[in-house]
Image (cartoon, rainbow over all chains, first blue to last red; front, top):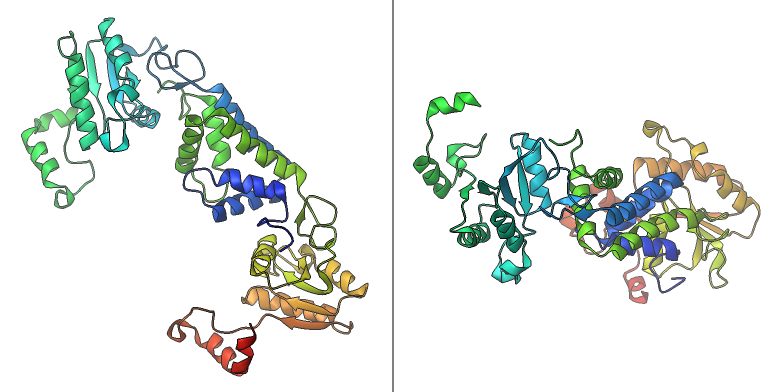
Length: 209
Length: 209
C-alpha cells in the first residue's frame, strides 16, 4: 500500500470516518455513501453538509414540553388551536410525530426523553418528570395521558409518574390496550387478548369514528 | 397537525430530506440519523457536515489513471516505488482499494469508470478507454491486466479493450478464474469449476505464496 491509510485520500478517509460514526452505518456503507457524493455535483454535498450543521445549531428543545423546536417554545405549545388542558406524556420526539400523524389529538405533549430503566442506568432524575409535575402543579391541566410503550419499563415509568401526580387535581389516563387494527386474533398474544376482553367496548361506539 | 409538514421544524425537515437523497437511506432511516445528531454535541454535526463538503470540494480525479486524488496526479501514479510498466484496468475506485488491500500489487491502475452495458446505455465513449489506449501508445507499459468483474458486461469490455490495444506492443492478461479461496467445490458453479480444471496450476507453485 502507498500509505498506512486505507484510502489514497485523507479527505475521503475523514468523510468515511465521520459517516461511519452514525448509528447503523459501517465503514463499507460509509464508503459507498462518500463515493456517491463524489459522483454528484458539488452542490449536493454542500446541501447535505450544511443542512446537518444548520439543523444541529438551529434546533433547541421546547422549554415547556421538551419537543424539538426552533424557538424557545415549540409550535404545538404556542398554538392557539391546541387544547392546553390535556397533556400526552411520550418517551421521545419520534412519538410526538407518530401521534401528530394520526391527526386525532388536539392537546399538548410532554416528552420524557426516555423511560425508567435500571438495566440501562436510567433513573427518574434523568427524565423530564420533575418538569411534568411542575406543569401539572401550576394548574390548567385537567388530564394527563400516559402514552409510553407497552413494555415493562413503560409500565414502571407510568406507575412512577402516577405516584408523583397522586393528590394533584388531574385525571390520569393511559392508552387503550387491545388488538392492533389489522392484526389476526391468532397472532395476538394472550395478555393483549385478555386485556381486550376485559376492556371490551360497545360495538355501536365504533360507528362514531 | 400544526403544519403541512411532517415535522415541527423546517431545519429537521431539510436535514431529513437531504439525508434521504443518499442511496439506500429512506426517510425513516434519515430521521433516525438526524435525531441521533441532535442528541450529540454540536461538534459532531459540524465534523460530519464539514467533512462531506471538504471531501467533495477537495477531491479530484487523477489525470493519468482517473483514481480519486487530492492532487493532479494521484499518490499511486506519482510513487517511485510503483512499477509503471504494469497497468491494472479496473471498473471503479473501489476496485483500486480492493487491490491495494491485497498488498500484492506494485503496478499502476487505470479506472474505467464502469463497464460497457448497452442495457444501461453505457457505451465505450462513456468510459476512460481512449485515455487507456493513449497511455499504452505513449510507451513504457509492458503489461495491461484486465481486472473487470467476471460478468457478461465485464467480458464484453475486456474484449473491446483487447481489440483496441491489438497491434500495440503490450502483453494483455486477465485475472485468473477459479474456485474462490474458502469456497466448497459443492457450491462452486460448473463454469467456474470447468475453468479451474482447464487452468489448473502445479501444486508445488502454491508453496511459493
